[in-house]
Image (cartoon, rainbow, N blue to C red; front, side, top):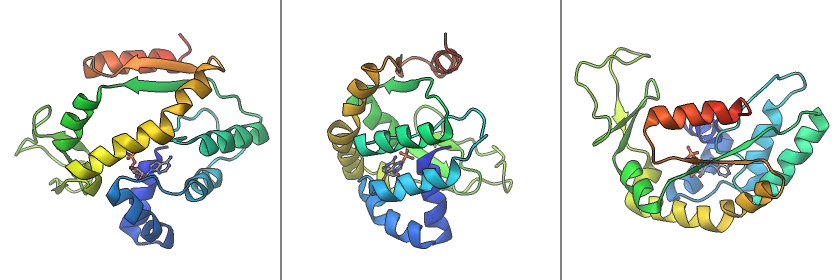
Length: 186
Ligand code: AMP
């Protein structure tokens, strides 16, 4: 479950939550903790089995709320993955990213150019757009917000022996293998 996807879905549907979240997202700011925590709380239920949260928690209060929710569910937190990528490389990746409105697939101007004859999994033809928060000013803001609000979680989870740092600048296949093995507990 990816909080960014859930929020973009709410924006696309024009729900009240979506309308509130949109202005933060477009600027590259974090959506308020209470909104995101409420969204996760709604979806975590007893007996949900194993799950992976993508993009959550992103602040200390979110991490503390997650601890509390997992305690209530009597579900242990097995591992926290941190994908390490330099600031320069992140800007390069985000600036060229285009996403299909219909199927959600990501393309990239340099790393994965859109193929004219590629079929869209949803409608047959991809309708590409650039996320408002992938524009240069928003990207810079997202990286500053990460440093101020999310980076402290590295110490939080390292102290509990849960952090698994993965070099995100390797090939996609290598990153995939390392994520799979970190999740499997190797
Ligand atoms: P992402 O798709 O993970 O890059 O998230 C896109 C945007 O959604 C972020 O820049 C935030 O505005 C918002 N967002 C996603 N996850 C969170 C979160 N855990 N806390 C606050 N805002 C979030």
